[in-house]
Image (cartoon, rainbow, N blue to C red; front, side):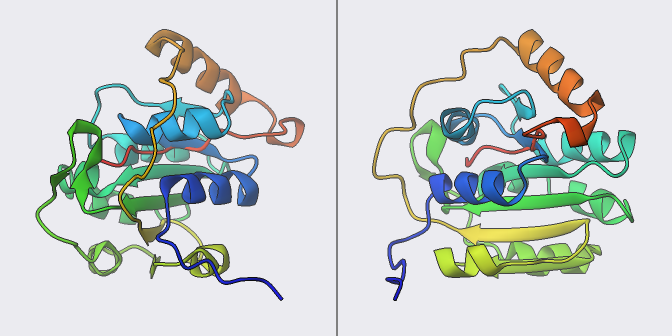
Length: 205
């Protein structure tokens, strides 16, 4: 019998689940610890690590999803990052048919800049539904994360996480120019030929 996962979810849990469940997706990660977490979990051409672009993971993911219909695109966002750009939610909601999953890792703080508290624990799933997302779920445990299915995109997965207990791992070693070239190659490749597709993510801020 499996032992329940009782510790707070971590960004590592989220990255591992996304990479396992969506091995051919394109992942866009926002700046800060989120991109570092994804880089250390599995560095691959399909990962679009954002640098100094807080609040832009979802818009960039939307652009890629619209430019390449049928490609799975994941925006890995943070609560602080999304709060900076809530106006993007109705835009994503209007992208009917886009295979776009918006994942918000919510630890209630701007962790990458020192742990300053965000305004409050916003119910991003409720906000997404109000904006017109086709589906939105909120999860708090590993079991809920693994079972979560917010439905066809555009959809949102709001994942409550705890504060980081260890270091964020090494920094992304690719230059912004290299990252763009890698993602360009991945997004234009035959998805059936790729062992891994890029996933768009946003850093936990």
